[in-house]
Image (cartoon, rainbow, N blue to C red):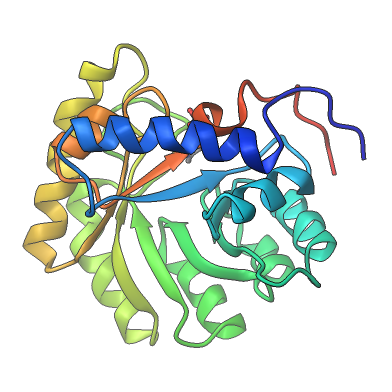
Length: 227
Ligand SMILES: *Cc1c(COP(=O)(O)O)cnc(C)c1O
């Protein structure tokens, strides 16, 4: 595997993580906000650097890419805890089910049914479409209570809600983040996964419990490779 860009040594990632943690603290989230390392676009060495830097929770967007990296690091101790954070197709659930610990992008019952079939009592988040932008995925906010109820009846452990903030200046993401937090509170869900490298402060201010960070830890992503 050839990887040419990014900060991929444990030391570099640890240093960048320090800066991310300072940003979180400055936004009022010290001790409350977990960091998920998003390794999409990078190879297994990024996963190892994250784990080495103290970030065992690692997120991937694409099923094949997750499966390939999971196999590469399968013998590592300690290894990562994989979170699936991308568009989830029902027919890809089988491929990643042996690896995934947390399914963050469940946005419809059919996918939940497939997860429940392959991974009993799995931990899931419901992805919510908090902006009107197409292509970001997520369940319409009005349908979230019914979906959360349905996933629970499948035996899945619904831990929280997840969203991708509006594109553009970070401040643009605030109304959506606020909406996500309120929805989670209404449903009694503890976890809210929101905030990325560019908008983490706004997300933390609005009550995020987990930010998903790629670029700020690893640098710009190389052009996506098919794995
Ligand atoms: C890529 C991605 C991230 C990380 O984005 P950065 O801007 O690189 O921090 C977080 N969440 C999701 C859903 C992503 O696709």
